[in-house]
Length: 561
Ligand code: C2O
Ligand code: CU
Ligand code: CU
Image 1 (spheres, rainbow, N blue to C red):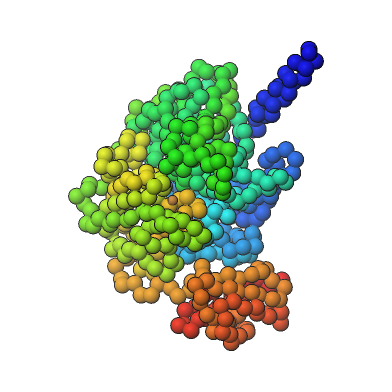
Image 2 (cartoon, rainbow, N blue to C red):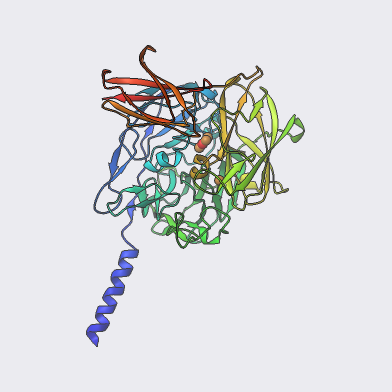
C-alpha cells in the first residue's frame, strides 16, 4: 500500500516535472549598424529541443537573422545573398521605399545570387522586420526561420528618456510557434504546438529592476498573441507599428496579430529578486480571432489554441547604473491626415469563399491574387481612405506595403488609444469594417506594384492579396514575365529539367538563356508539362523561358551542377 502511494506520487511528480521542464535562456539576435548590411541566407541548425538539433533557415549563421539598426535619413544598402537553393525574396516590412526595393513577390532572388536594394530610410523610430515574400512560398520559407528585426532610430525618439540598451533594458522579442516531428525537425504548419520566443522554447531572461522596454513582433504564421503579465500588472504601449504614440497608453492586455509590432514599457523598479511571466492569454479570445480557436483535429489542431501560455519567464535582477525608473508622460506629437484631405475612398472587401486552390479560402475584392493584375492605380501624392469591409466569418490582419496609415474607425468607432498611431497592419475582426487614411507620396513607378494582403501566411499564399502601383503615367501591360504559374524542378539539376504549368497553359517554345542574356538552347514543344534535356550545357546559372501560344512568357532561373 505504502509502496503504491509512493509510486503514484513519484509518477505524478515526474509528470509535473515534465510539464514544467527547465527554462532555456532567451537568445538575443546580434545587431548590425552602419549603412551597408550583408545578409547571407543559408541553412543552419540549432539545439531547440533536447536530442537532435533542428535544421532551420538561417541568416548570417543563425536561425532568425541579426537585428539591423537603421537611422532615419541614412541611405542604406542591404546585400542579400541567397544560398538556400531555392528562389526567395526579402521584404522590408513597414518601410516607405521604392517599389523595386520592396522585396515583394516581384523581386525574386534566384539561388546563389545577391540582390542589393538601397534607399533612404524615411520611417519613424520603431520596430520593423524583414521576411521572405515569394508568392505561394511565404509560409514554407517563414517556417524555415528566415527573417529578422529592424530597429529604426530617429532624433525625436532618441531625445526621450526611454530604455535603449539592447538586450539589457530594451529587449527585442520575435514571437512565433512551431510544430516538430519525432526527429525534432520543423513541420510547416499554420499553428505550432510550441511557443518560440526569439527561436527559443520555454525562454527565460533576466531584466533589471527598472523600467524595461519590450519590443514585440508577431512573426507567427497565423497566431495572434493576447499579451499580458502573470501578475495582471499594467504595462504601457509606447509605439504602434510605425512610430511612437503621443503618450504611453496603460493597458493590461494587448492583442498582437501576425505581422504587427508593439513596444511596451514595464515598470520593475524595486522588484529585484522577484519573477513575472509575459504570457499570451489566448483563452480570452473568441474563435474568430486567430489563436482563439481550438480545433480538436485536422490541419489546424495545435496545443496552444484557445489556451494561455508563457511567452517569456522574467527574472528581475539588480538595477543597472543610471536606470530609467519612470514612465514618461508624453512621447511625441503625431500629425495625422485629416479625413477631409482624402480625395478618394477605396472599398476593399474581404470575404469567405467555398472554393480556392485546395479548398475554402478567403478573397480580397472577390478574387484571388494574380501576379499580373493591378488592383489599384494610385496617383502620386494622393491621400486616400481605404475602407476594409469584411463579410468573412474569421478575423484577418490586413497589411499594406509602402505607407504607414492612421486608423479612422473600427466598426464605426474611433480606434482605442493603443492603436491611435502609425500602423501598417490592422486586425479586421470578423464581419467588421475598418477605415484608415494614408498618403501615397514619393516613388512614382507605374510598373512595379506594392502589395496589400492578409498577413496570415496561409491566406496570403492561397491568394488573399492584391497590388497597387503609385504613379501618374499610364500603366501598360505590367509584366508578362510571370513565374507563379510555372513549376521547375529539380533545381539545381544535373541535366534533366521538368516543367509543369498551371491552368492548362500549353507551352510551345522553351528557351535557355545564360547569365549574359544569350540564347544557348531552344526546344519546340506542345505540352503543359515536359522533360527537357539540358545536360549538354556547362555548370552555372541559367534562365528557362517558356512561351505559350498567346505569347505569354514565364521565366525561372535554375542552376546546373
Ligand atoms: Cu510582412 Cu507583405 O508583408
Ligand atoms: Cu510588408
Ligand atoms: Cu486572412
